[in-house]
Length: 520
Ligand code: ADP
Ligand code: ZN
Image 1: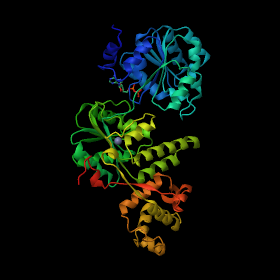
Image 2: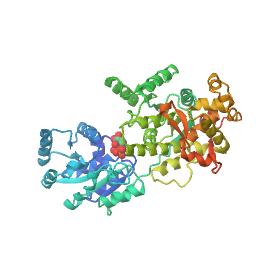
Image 3: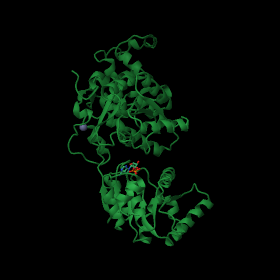
Image 4: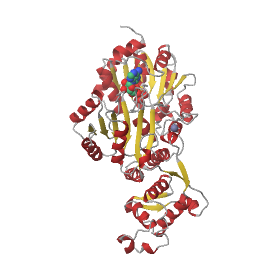
C-alpha cells in the first residue's frame, strides 16, 4: 500500500484532491509536530487527523465530546474499511473490554473517546501499553470557559502532553474568535503548535435576506426568476410546513421533495438519495437535513423561517455552491419569525443560563437580518474573520439599504402600545395607528384614543417593518402568555422621551427585491 497522503485520500476516502489547508496540516502531523486548526464547519477537519493516523504507526486517539457524532463517524469509517472504534458511556462493560483488547492487539487505526473516559486511571494505564499515532482534540473550544460549550473534562487534556510528550497533538475547532483561540493554546499547552486558520468566507455565495410578505409566493418568484431547473434546499422550521411547502411547490411545477425526521426512514433515505443523484431537485427540509450532505452543485439555499443562530445560518447556507460556482443564500424574514423563535426558547426546558446564551445567539441572527451594511462583513465578523471591504456580492452591497429617521414613527408605535394597555398584537396596533374603526377597536373604545389614526401617513407594510425592527432591537417585547401582545421594555424609554434617535431600515418593496438587479 502506498503511504502518501494523497493516495490515501483517493483510495480510502474516494476524493481526488485536498481542500484548503488539509495537506499542510496532515504533513505537519506526520512529521510529529503539533497543530491548531480553525476551520469552519464542513471545511473538512476530520481528514486532518484521520489520514495521519492511518500513516503514522499506532492508533490515533480522537477526543470528542459529542457521543452521537462519534458513533456516526465510526460507522462511516468502518464502511470505508478503516479500523475504527469508540469508547464512551453507551458501551457495556463487555464491549469496552473487547475494544481495549483490540487496542492492546494493535488492531485499531482510530479510537474515538469521550474526554471523561480519557482521564481515568484505567485509560492512562492502557495508553502506556499501546503505540499511539497522535492525539486529536476535536471541538477544542470546549476547553474555553469564555465559550458556551465549556467542559471541565477538557481541562484535564493538558495532562496528555505531560504524560506523552512525544506524541503529536492536533486541536480542532470551528470557533475562530481570538479569545477562544488564546485560551485553547494556553490551556492545552499548544503555544508551540502551528496555527492553521482557514478563512470562513464563501465568496461565491450571494447572501440575500428579504422582508417576508407572502413567503411562498416570494419563494416561487425567486426560484422561477433565477433557479429554474436547479438543485436547491428550502429550509422550514416545522415538519408540517415542510410537507405543505413541498406539496405546494410541486403544484407550481417545481420538482420538490420533503425531508424531515418525522418521515418514514426508508422514504427519507430515498429522498436524500434522489437529491444527491438526480439533477435539478429541490429538497424542502427541516434542519434534520444536511449533516454530512456534500452535493457540490446546490445552486440555492432558501430559508422560509429564521435560523436560531448565525452559526446555523452559516452552516445551512454553506451547503450551497460547494463547487465554487455562484450560489444564492436567500431568506424571507418577518416579525412572526422572531416571535416564534423567542417563544420556542421561552418554552424550552433549558436552564436559565443556557437560555440566556440562546437569546444572545438569536439576537445576533436578528442583527444580521437588520444589517444596513455589507452582510458578509457582518457574517464573517461574527466568526472573528475580518473582511476589509464590503463584498459586492450581497443584497446590501448590490442595493444599498436606505435608512430613515424612524424616531417619530417609533414614538407613535410605542405610545399606541402604551395607550392600549400593552394587551394587543401587531395587527391590531397597526389598525389603531392607521385609524381603522374595526368592530373590535370600536368596542374597546380605542377609536377615541389620541393615538387613533396618528399613523395614516405610513403604509401598513411599513408599519410592519417598524414593529419588526422594534422587536428585533429589543425595544418592544412579545408577551406569549397573552397571544403575542406587544409590551414596552426598559430600553424603549430613551426613544419615547425623545433622547435617542432611531434610524430604521427602509425595507425594499417585494418587487424590487426580486433578483439582484433593479427592475425600475
Ligand atoms: P468538519 O469536521 O470540518 O465540519 P468534515 O470533516 O465532516 O468537516 O467534512 C465535511 C465534508 O466534506 C464531509 O462530507 C467530508 O467527507 C467532505 N470532505 C472533506 N475533505 C474533502 C476533500 N478533500 N474533498 C472532498 N470532500 C471532502
Ligand atoms: Zn456585501
